[in-house]
Image 1 (cartoon, rainbow, N blue to C red):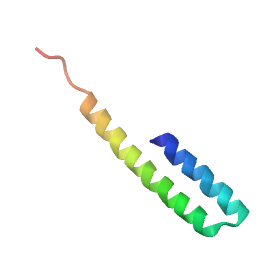
Image 2: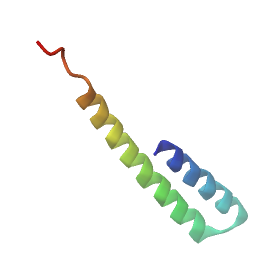
Image 3: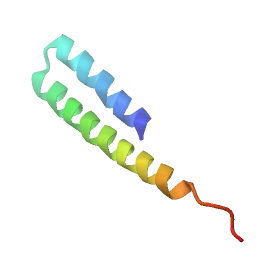
Image 4: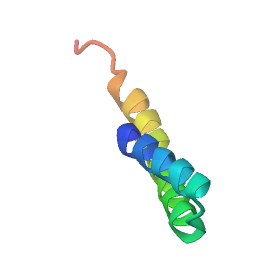
Length: 55
């Protein structure tokens, strides 16, 4: 998921440099959403993955 966020960020940067404002804005928004989803899933995975030994 982080890879997709970085891909959309690069697309947004390239589109912004070339002057495609709408495409750049859309790609940047998608990148932000994917990054937030990645962070939430990462934190949940960290918290759920740390379990003590079964007695």
